[in-house]
Length: 242
Image (cartoon, rainbow, N blue to C red; front, top):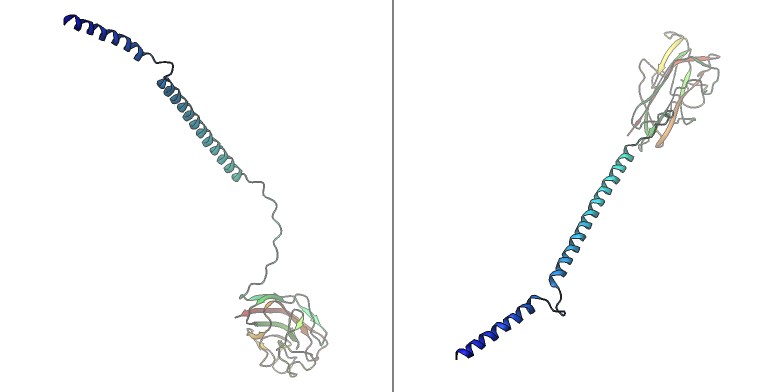
């Protein structure tokens, strides 16, 4: 009995001695799992470092590009010479005014365009309405008429009492020497009373086509009582009306 137990114990020990080396050393058919995991981990770490480095390079490139754009935006070239200021166009709704002090003379019974005008340009609104003020100082009795774009403005006073020798209507006119009248007169609009108004001129309403128009005063000897008439201190105002 004891002999059998002893033999059995020896066999068990021998089997254990053989099995332990077999478990400790991998066989040729068993892969080195631990070694493969270490190498894969190393490669992953290398890839992560590479990605981080690329991201950092991308950020630096973006900052460089942004700085270049800012520098380009702040760069200002030399300022060129300022060109001449153009003429001021007519303003719709505002009164346009011109005044000519210089004395001018005419010998014509028709309306003559004299130096200095006065002349104004306005933008007539859709209503087609304008108001006009005119005034002039004249020696003896002369006549003054309004022209639009070089054409006699319709709707002016056609009374032969004021201008028996003038073709076309008048904006206002003066009288020659006579009882109660001075040889030099300052006369203006409107022409309803004595063909002209003494003192401050009043407005006269006209109707025309919408758009930009140029207005001017033209002059005549009027009744033809004198061989020539001199005009000075000539005023013209035109205002568009809605």
